[in-house]
Length: 174
Image (tube, rainbow, N blue to C red; front, side, top):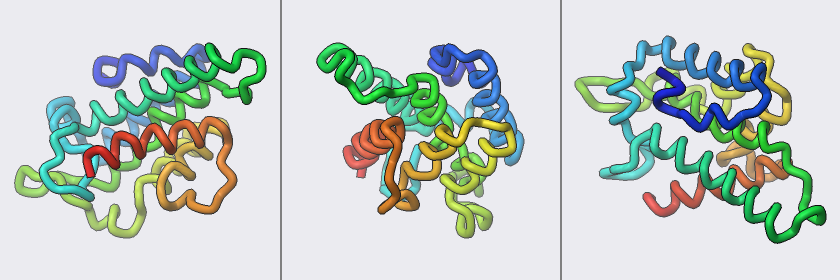
């Protein structure tokens, strides 16, 4: 189901890393028993009204923007470009919001912030899942620093790209 929803996870070249990303998603999905239909229809944020962009579409769009940004930097700057680990960039992009599957729940057919989510925001639960599944610290860094929780932290290049791509999608909706 995860690769049907998020086929671009297949762009992670390191098979072990790819498997760990999928394992994080599997665990987050099972935490609340999310179905494919719910995942395809839930909004990606509860911080704005009438959000039409779904959670899955947001995750895919931001991951694609990250890859596109890296492609442009490679094309224009070539060997002068700041080194980016593309696998870490893609893995971080697909895991940055996985914690929302713990933060949200469906009540009376509508997504709401769960009591868990009121205490633990998705960057924290996302890092917890990533740690449990032995993802590299660089990937956990992308998850940890992508939102307001990362303000003031020195971000790795992969986190800088993800943070800006994520906020492009978020700010256009907000």
